[in-house]
Length: 349
Length: 63
Image (tube, rainbow over all chains, first blue to last red; front, side, top):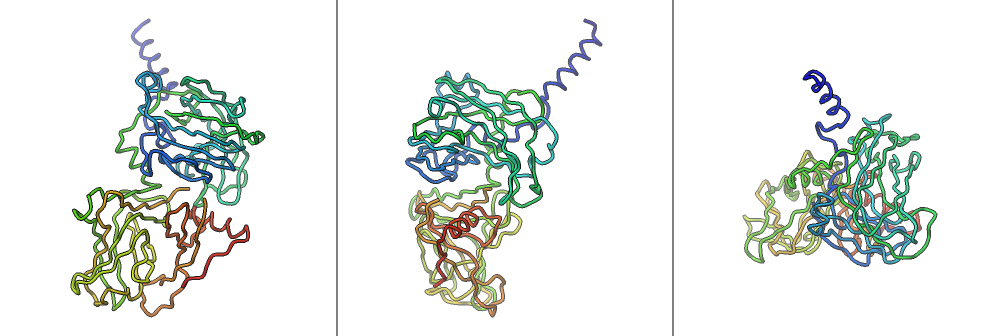
């Protein structure tokens, strides 16, 4: 082959292999990030429990879910250190796992072919198969559900599916909650209660008709992508050694604002917030404070949550019982130290 | 999601201290955790609460 022919061939390979640029539309496909925890047992409700961005769908089933570490052999096979395990103890149709891809990250591929690849093993629902389902939807409308069949074995195998960008139907892809959902489910027509397990990792969805090698991203980069949907702040200091302090001030006579800087700009402007452990609202000038446990409600006042840019503002509008009202003064809000105290801001689809 | 308590919380949606208090958020205990949930149809917890209400349940008024 001449040099010119070699170069031409190389160009063709590069084009057809799609190896350039950011390819994987899935976030946390290697199941590395698990901010909420690494296991959850005997669950009956759909929610996000372990690996970030991966939602478990209960649909009447009872299940355990966990982030698992691969053996050296399986790590060599899958290229991933971890996998997500969905262990259904009592099955039902449409139970499984899914990732909801926000419209901003998928709508530009309308009309394109998409290729999904992943490694999976486990046991099949009712001895049959799983459905690999994708659809476009928002809060009230969905396009056409399209699906493929998946039959797993007891060893990790790479599976690849190429399909058209799903039918949007009447969904407006600029709606706040428009999305494409990609799910691995017990089939809709299978209502058996038999147990099954799905172990899955290295999930990649990319534009084109070829499954390219899994795109590895650094842990920090993957975490940052996950934090667009969920930020967890953990006070890792042991009791009494270091509170996390949010600066604040009063405006007027009773209003108090506290600012929590977030690591990234989150998906929507109205996330939900939960916390575990003690918090404290304090007037340093008056040397008085009030504590609360597992809630932001302090001294009878529940803050309004105002999200702006990558800042979450806790706005306490009113006199907080136990804390002196001082006009135009500094206040602070503390996440009291203890290893299990955490603060979760949730903006998932 | 399993709810054990769903209640409105009062607040002022502006920094005007003289503005009337109104339902500004929902405090819900979901699977044992207390969530502060904005009244926004784009919020996933709010959506689930609306489904729960549609099933005949009622959000408690703020105290």
